[in-house]
Image (cartoon, rainbow, N blue to C red; front, side, top):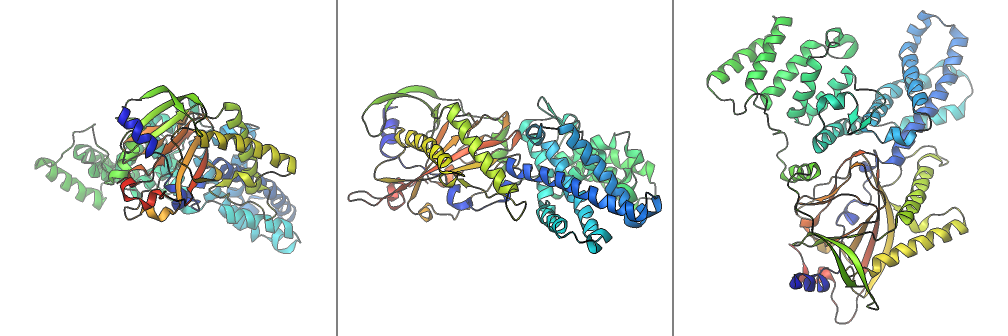
Amino acid sequence: MEGFWTFLLYVVVPVVCCLQNVCASDDRHMFTSYPNLLKLYYMEEESLSNVDVFLREELFEHGDKESADAAHNLTALRNLVAEAKQTHREVGSNTKEYLSHPVNVFHLARRLRTGWKNAIGHIRNSKPCKEWHMPQLISRLANIEDNLPSEGELTSVTYNLLTIQHTQGIRTQDLLRGKVGNRSALEPISPQEQFQVAKVAVDEDDYFYAAQWLKHLSRSAKLKDMRKEEDGFNATNVLGMLASAYFRINMLPEALKVTNQLLKKDPENMVARTNKVFFEERIARGKESTKTGSPKRFGNEDTYRRNFERLCRGTEIKPKRLKCVLLPTWPRSKLSFHKLEILNRRPPIVAFHGVVSRRDATRLVDVAEEEYEKIAMDSEEGFRTPEFTLVMSKLGKTRAAQYKQQQLLSKIRTKLSTLPYTVRPPYTSGESEARNFGHQGFYIKPNPHFQIQNLGAHTGTAMVFLNDVEMGGEIVFPTANTRIAPQMGTVVFYFPSFKKFHTICPVAYGTEWVLIHSFYERRAPYFCRLHEDPDLQQK
């Protein structure tokens, strides 16, 4: 133990968040951040008010006739408006609670992408927009259209439901009802949405969950009412995909059983007839390697990704080594007790608990949340996606507000700088940045060719949890087999190395706020920077 602390004192001084330089400008993880989801919610709210203007003009011109609806494709628009209005009425002032649930977010993203994209395009090409002088309305509609979710973003949100299901161990029937833990979504997942999720699972080669979702859909009483012309699929499509998914996870008896069900509905289906012969031959030869009812999730051959998901599930976690120790602060003017958790010894990863008070953490979140919302919704150009990081030192609408924020930041930065064994003089304290993570979490696979030397003089980062998270949001180190759950006021430190590349598990309910604080080394006589000393490099 003594050797470890000696090592910690002299070597575990500069620490780093490897993603700081690699991903600081990466905005793709911002889609399910709370500020961006709030932007999307208010975009739909504004779209509703604009559509009311449009519908009044259309009805004034044509009257409330079904033929006019058919001519202008207004039926689908009216249905969309009715659904969205009902949702917003039920949400009321509980916007944060609504956006905390991943199923609600999936519904919102799907409405915006599939419903509002077509609706806004139709409105912009309508007679009122073309012949009436409404430049402000046209401009706002164009801004909303530019900020609608892309197909890739909708796919990401859809597959994220399966990632949350896997990492949280949620039963498929519960998620279909909109249940995540003890939290319920505003609406359950419809059969059309089930089929969409299953298709995305197939596209991602995740046949294990594709089979689970398709199995429940095949047993749905509503499946017989599905029409391919109206809904995009029917019972034959579902059974065919289910048989294929069973085959991919080596459940050959189940694949044959489903194929026989398909042939009862469609005896002339040539693909099913061919598959039936193939499955029977394989079973006769005894080639099935998985017993019915106990398939394995083979889909992802990426070891790093599998370790990430395993750690997020909480399986095979190392026991905590939490100690209350008397350690010197810097400068060494006093001794103080610190609740220190050794997350990993080699490479060293440590956490200090209770460093930032709940009051200070809450104040920082309030400041960051207000600024993010202002960026996303109150800009002169209209709605826009906030950036991945928010530099706290540049905030504040007035001098008084800036002064209060700087006082708060200075207090927290001083605490971080004086924690034992976190930095070694001479150093320069860098910026403090707020980041928000949502249902997507933060997952990037490290590049094995990435060299720590590329970080330059950036040698240390402290990550501070600013709020408690109800479900998910753990920081995990897939290569070091280490994870830590978010706890308000906890500070995590670690060193620059390939083994300490961190990821963040999906937030299954709620949102996660963290503060990133950087340290930079200065050149000085008889001192070398960490990246210049090969003996200090962690392999």
